Image (cartoon, rainbow, N blue to C red; front, side):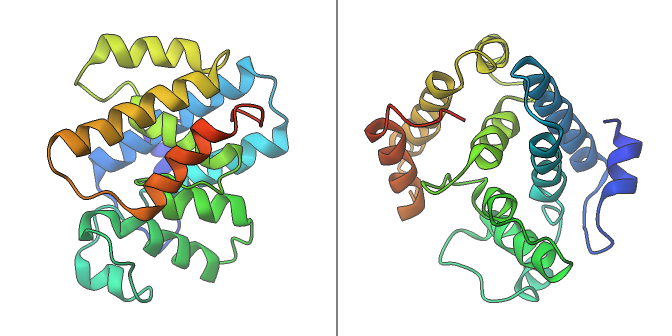
Length: 190
């Protein structure tokens, strides 16, 4: 999906500048690539696309705009765009709980995610526009279609480990997400 296609597909309530639109286009493209490699159904791919299109639809909104979509969780303000976008999407007619949870928790992780949430979490973090640790991210991109569970665990471990190393805040949802990854090795990887 090109940035122009993303711009046209964004909901009318979105607040996203050109850099954000380009990021979302890369996330959608990566999800499409993985879906094709994994022979995901058209209906499931449509869910992944909707989650990707919505996840950062309010990322460039200010705190006042985010608060208009309802009470925000006790998380850092920079993570409020997910819950606000999920609330806006629900009010706009999105009724798929998996898509809404993917959008709401994409910055933190969520133990109750289905494939849409897990794959969005991965694509959002490793997409080709990220400039840090590019070799590692590229390796994860290549492995995800065949090894989604392993890559999900590695990405979550890196993200959580970075927060711990730097004395950062860790949400209860993030810990529950981590515990669900390591505790349930037999369930669907993504």
